[in-house]
Image 1 (cartoon, rainbow, N blue to C red):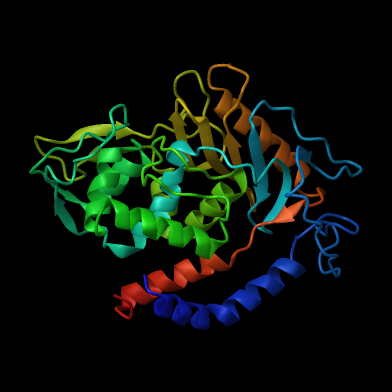
Image 2 (tube, helix red, strand yellow):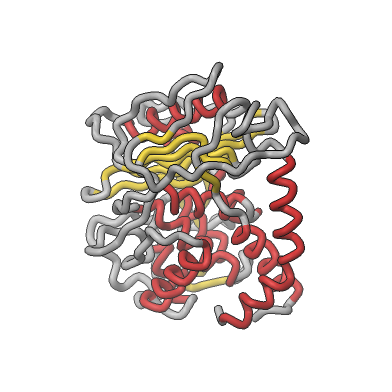
Length: 352
């Protein structure tokens, strides 16, 4: 997408960004005292101290706030999406392989560009170049799929075949990687280096708990992304027929499978695994008027389902701690506003 296009979107959303920033400052940005106002709503907030560049676990002890659970993940972060406050984190900017959680960046980049009802008849060229061992949605050559079907393949099955088909529509594999890198930079995701659009282990490819949190926050601000991230099962193709098959979301914390109980209020977002990255997960849950986002990268305990159970522990802690916790950093919200406005412009036919 051209710089001119994004400049126009920025101009159109400047007022909204300012308004949102003011609302974030006057709302529940921090808890009682110098770092928060969940119980002092309307009080002038103090600047939030950014500790995310510091190594190790970052958490500001406060009366009545439990310490975060001890988990084995190399990197993690817990964010209150209502205020964009990062409540606690460990090595949030550590560059690690993201595995299929990188598909959230792929979706942020490509999802707004094609109507969900558009049809793509999958060709052999669409499916060329898929790495051996990649997760697949089971797309078949010469079968017409709606774009919505392809996105079900991405979000539910983590299918590299679906990513390849959409990347071909977007102008090709290498162009899509370049587009994803541009999107990451626009968002301020400086830890992310994209070398493979589907997250497959590729030398030099990295992201971080902070950047994945940015991707999760921006994605949940888009209606289509949020719906896909929360979808548990689908028929592929959705319209049925002799080639249709059922698929289930591989996010065990969402659907409850393989010995993992579903998490109350979970609304997505994306899981991943490769032998190099280990298990990775972006998970969001809502209880009442509070939504939390947790990112977990590469647990080291060796326990089965560790990434899901460690995310569960961090979410439980976050819901308990959020009303009074002090923030260790903030996720910027400007890109999510730009994304929503860009989608509105595309729907109006103002942006090609």
